[in-house]
Image (cartoon, rainbow, N blue to C red; front, side, top):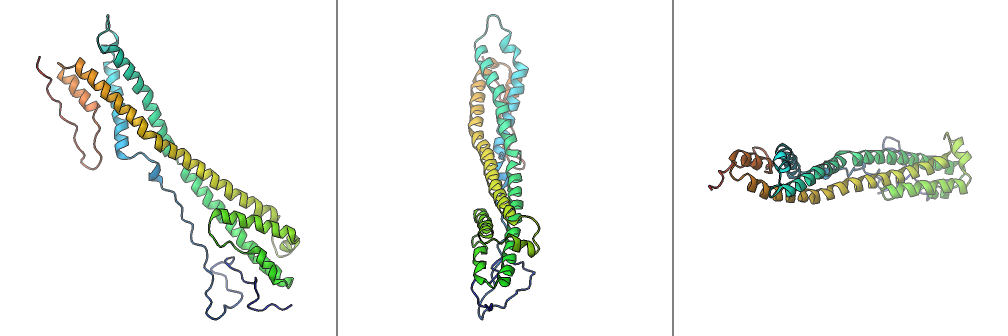
Length: 284
């Protein structure tokens, strides 16, 4: 049967390139199909990084750790033990354990696994989309050879531009080629390789990449969610140490001044807030 310009199923849909000349003129008033929009990566690196205040809180814990190390002898070498010695040792140990937990979550945030998975997913998507377009174009040529315009209905490009739809189209194209025994026709039209296996492999790669991206996002998101609780633990440790240090060194202005600097959370922003100046100890 002859193929006319308005034969259903004959159009290339979105399976052609922008620089490819349209094979059939458009009907009067018909608009050319639009290519899929450029893939927008939803990768937001800053979403999974500590903010300024959290970094300052971590720095406080590190300064407090250094202070406790420098003054540990005053709380561990007393015979008999003095008031506050046991509590200081307990809090110092808790802070020592806490800091690696915080920095570990920070390292997970900064690891870049989500960004890498996002880029890998984009590559797999582009490869599958190119194969779908090639399959669509070749199927159009086969439909002409076989005088079977309805054949192209089995090779429509997906209407929705998302990975699940692309993967489903890849599987559907592979099934159509098997059911219609078109593998030899694709080879005759210049396709090198196993078109069915390639379509299914590319579809699987896209779905696997999407799963990898989701797993990476969950890992980094879990680290981000864990940080506030860990930093609150650090704040509570510092508050308890503050009472012990100020009681033990109430007549030692130099040590109290050093402690005030160590336990202070600096502000964020340019020209941030200066640490408070040491106050003289109470008399008596």
